[in-house]
Length: 231
Image (cartoon, rainbow, N blue to C red; front, side):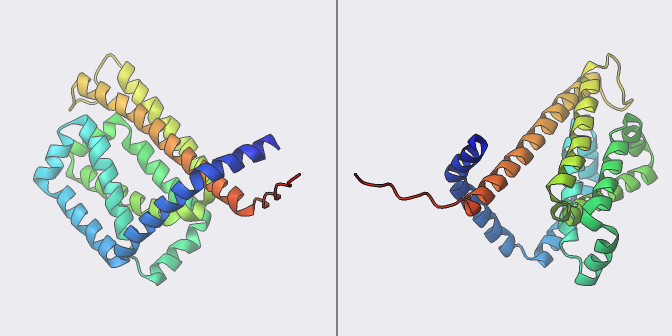
């Protein structure tokens, strides 16, 4: 009973703000049609693959993982929105509940967090091409899988990726030697700190989203309050 009242209190307080934010986001996505999102993703990918931009991002270990990786994921997510209906149907047949897509994205991120993979991407064009393609495909997989996954599968995915990210970040901080030959120790420690912060921030944002969704659901199904009697 106490938990229900607490959730109802949260619903009363936060649901209007959450609904307003969702409405505003819905308007933004309505303006960004699937075709526009796909074109934006293609333009973003072209900029990221431009040699001068790519070299600038990869010159720093922190920019390599904290800027280039997320931007390539984002470009893939935008490109996925432009897939025709038959392609989405074909994907959904092997991606029930978003499990296959999220598992694939987890494996890609796990491999690319290995320091040796970063070193090879800088010196081997084939590894660099595979890295970029894998991140773009992972972004598309996340876009096509996230909503279908539901809270339980999302929690399982984040419960694997975020602790892994935080552990890798802490190892980068604590390591007394360079784990990547191409980057300095200070840059490595900087990346480690931001990886830990990013893992905490993403976990917090997801939990806030879950609480807001539960509060909104509780507000919808909550029984009306009885009228106060007058003596």
